[in-house]
Image (tube, rainbow, N blue to C red):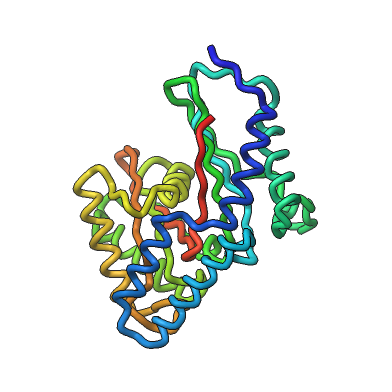
Length: 279
């Protein structure tokens, strides 16, 4: 049994909060630059140029890519041979507190969803844990802005709706979102499970590199088809028209009940931030 002190988790979370907010993942930068090279619309070209300039400045000067530094989503894959010495939840929240404070990142979390008083330190984190084989902990920090989060949807479709119903729901969700999530977007889709699991899968799908297609060929083909359909909508960068509405569609799935077909769509703007390290 390997022991990892909770203080180490705190330190790493703090580092990841700043890094994730200031440096866009390489795969997302590549998707944006590739889209710019293929974009025929003049206005869209100009917007993509500004997006590229913006994330270049953010990385160079170590400043946030976007003013909405998000609610902090933390994904932990914890090896079953690891013992954490200390309070895990407290360690994660302390890491977020330090990272958002020391990094001068905007604090956007309210303590109560109806009384709306800011917690002042961007805690608590949205914490997701998974027990896996091994003696390591994989940490992923994903700041999630709400311009795109607010455009996300979940539907409990009927099994008879089938794949065409799923396609229609994904496409309609993007249509309804229009310019609001700051396109070009990355679309995370969760299919199956239960009401809550579908939403989790959609969020988790956004953590997968856009360079990696679903390992199941059936779903890989569905990802490609939906990306083409979404880009044919013509919403374009910032909603001002163009062929680049989405950079990628990532789908995750799991078994479900014979009576159900849960589908969730979690939209992310072009600033699809996430950083991972292993302890």
